[in-house]
Length: 485
Image (cartoon, rainbow, N blue to C red; front, side):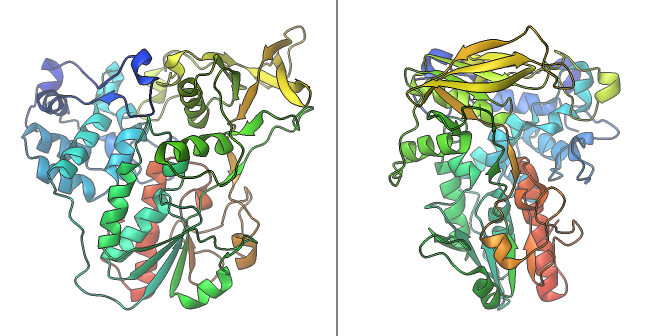
């Protein structure tokens, strides 16, 4: 390591946010990058630990320590400390196709597993990663990597989220002709239509798409595969036209809350609400959909995860009067027991930037009924629950609500259309059954990766699976592969 004693001499210092009053005025990113000197100082804190758990173990188990794409974190930290940013970029991109995505929206399990996190002072790995890739773009280092030899094989990738994009880029670099089919107007999946612009502006996606197009990837927009929408492509015909097909359409079936009053207007799934605002920001038409807006309303978000947090930040920027977030789980501890949890991802209280903008958070709450006037929701009837989610008598209460956003996660991919037409087997959770060994489904030459295969998960896991799926498809087509895992 370049600075053996760096962790002893330099305090942890991370990126700051713009003040709440300023950042609520727009939908732009509000994270303030560190200076070059500060970033290099933070990289110098990476210690020469015996077992760097930040790398990741290669396991697929939830909570596994470290980086799912196995970034070589000590190596790029050292390169940044030495000022060799271009080599740091090459190192980072050797394992991660899109570090500008993960450097903005990954929860950073690498930092949780950092040896310095035993003392609550992990290396600012996510910040350093983002600095590396942003500098690479600014300096023009990220040129298209065009395959020297074409294989003559054609691959269809269905879905252009992070798994589909990663698979497509890797396959194109292996020399295959790659066509990506996307039902919406632009590429990115939940990166484009779920993640708000204040967390990641969409030009970040656009420049990767341009790089991929220069590498030979063809994107087909407004092209649903399967289903009954006008112009939908028959997946059986698609499978006949291509040498391999990758299903990377995500897990889009939302978890509902079927309680009395659910039919009232003003109650919406998060993924009906969030994409609208992203389309407004980018100037993309809503195609006749009725506006779902939080301005001047008491908003209740049901669900305590990242999607719920995104609903909070979006609601405040639209001018919500108040935002309350309900979580059925009990409040987690403020601090984890390091002796028990490290280096695994710990369960502890976390406050997102959106939650810190003024949301009221309620834990261990079950919503039992929606109440309304003239067909519009006006109140929620709630009750506190114990650790087995059983209602506690005498703890009933009501909340005013003119907009309710259901952000309770996704249960599995949509089955109607694509999956039913192809007839691929599903696992017990309703996801596409595909082996982690080769990502093949029950249908010959049909592969699957990302949330469609593993269920709702992180962007970094989608990138990992897309890369590994591409490697399996390359092996299937060519009998061998030089693609990294």
